[in-house]
Length: 181
Image: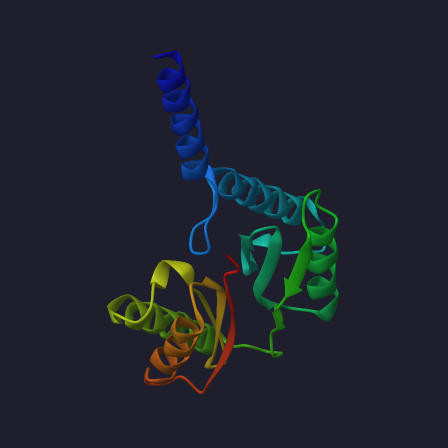
C-alpha cells in the first residue's frame, strides 16, 4: 500500500514537472515571464534614454534574444537603441533591425505610409497563412518593414508575399525571425 502511494505521488510530481517544462514548439511559463520582463525592461530603458525615440522602436523578445525594429531619424539613434538593449540585465543577444528614415518626409508621405501600414496589417490578419499578432509592420516611403518572431519559415515567407500583394507597397524588408524552440 505504501509503495503504491509513493509511486502515485512520484508519478504526479513527474507529470507536473513535465507540464511546466518547455517543448520544441512551446515555451515553459517561466520562459514566457522572463521574456515579458525583459521586454518591459528594454522598453523602459529606451524611454529613459535621451537619444532614442522609444515610440518609433518595436521591441520583441524570444528566449532572451531582443529584436529591435522600426524607423528612426539618425544612425546615432539606431546605435544608441542597440546599446541600450544590450545593457539590460538578462539580454543574451540583440538583433538591431532598425532602419533610418529617408530625409525630408512630407505630411502627405507620412499619411500615405500610415494608410499603407494599415492595409498591410489588414491583409496579414485576413491571411490564413500568417498570425498577424506576431508581426510588427512599419512603413517608410512605401517600403514596408516586417519584424517580430514567427513560428516557422513558411510563416515568414507568407508574410512577405502578403505584404508585397498590397497595392502601393514599393518593397518589403522582411526582418522576421523564426522562434527558437
